[in-house]
Image (cartoon, rainbow, N blue to C red; front, side):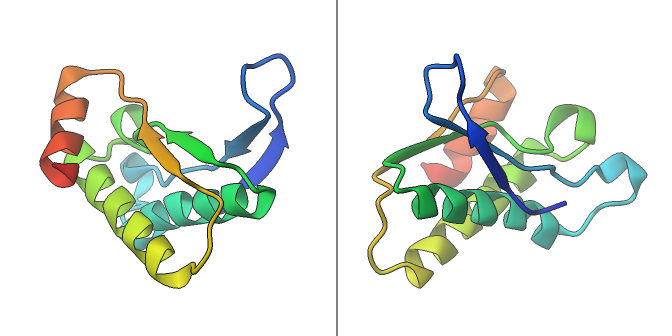
Length: 112
């Protein structure tokens, strides 16, 4: 949990798919650092591939029990840390693909 692995995109309109397993709040996995690690390690994996863009869902929100606002805060912190740690990244675009209005609103509150 909290790591990331890469597979080819096969028949998807993407060169790669980066897989991460987020913490499940329902089974006691409540450490926000684990959630932040999912975003951070996915960003590192994308950068190591030379990817120019990455799209994220709201990792662990919904069925894994995390509040969308907490997920947005973890994503924001991971992006900030990645930017501070990385001097020359290939990543130019980071998008969030969010499937409900409440989740999108939570991300808008954090990201502006």
